[in-house]
Image (tube, rainbow, N blue to C red; front, side):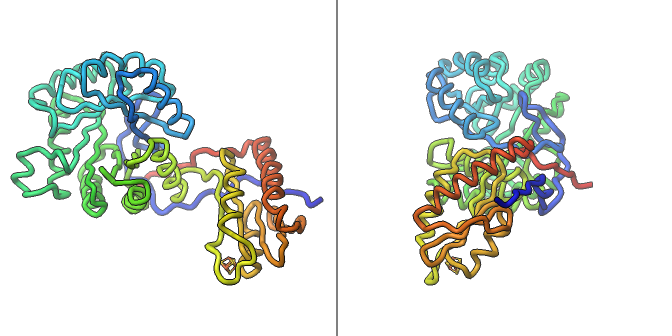
Length: 385
Ligand code: SF4
């Protein structure tokens, strides 16, 4: 049998050095500076339903989510925060609109951070001093989350609508109120549902401050549209080194948001790729049902944590080339599949055996990778000078 040579994965190439940002600590997760870009999501349960919320957090954790946000619109929700923060395996951020008293409740409850939306919090400016004091004493970072839909009335009047300039001015103004009280453990988001406005807002913010930035396209829409919008907007910014933590907002279960977020980071080499299926789009030359084959292989290898690249190709035109480049691959034709491992044809199997052979070989390689300590991890990050 052909020997399998397994080296460490190549050092990933990247599009740009990271922007220099200050680092804050959200519980166990560092955000900004040279910390890897993290993926976060938000629960959809009533926070006061502690069991359901913790269950969803556990699902999010299993899907790779690193930070979770929970809404806190009522006193019952505020009362649930302490238990949720204590039992969650990942840092919990309380999301506060309207009521400053819940900001204090979240800090007291031991939440890893608090998100505030100054545009939505009445008399927020009056409370900044007290919030800064409480947050400082407990080392609780604050996210200033400016949203196009709830922009401060004063800025809406000044700019006429939620322009990038208006979003940035709002965020920096609120941050300056905290800074006046010596509090700088701040990260910022300036979300808009239009990726073009959003990208411009974050670019301006990145140029004007060193705050770590939480990227988000707000109300991005149902899964397909939201995925495209987020990938385009995050891709534009992350490819310029802008962005320290991301949240994909979808009208879909939150674990889906995490999957999309992780895929965006993996596509940009900001996170070590895990399983990657390289499959051809199929065409008139295909001699096998590529869609079905790719789906069956994906399903069979779902959950593999090692950075394995599997090529599923429909014919012998590009098939052997792609299959050779991957860790494992198949080039199909004439009712058969040539199986490649690390560039070498190891066997040819009938079409009916392609899926099971690929899965079997993938498991062998994965096992070897795990033994060799090649698991998914974070690529090294370099910071712009
Ligand atoms: S590999 Fe073959 S079947 Fe697949 S797209 Fe290319 S030419 Fe078409």
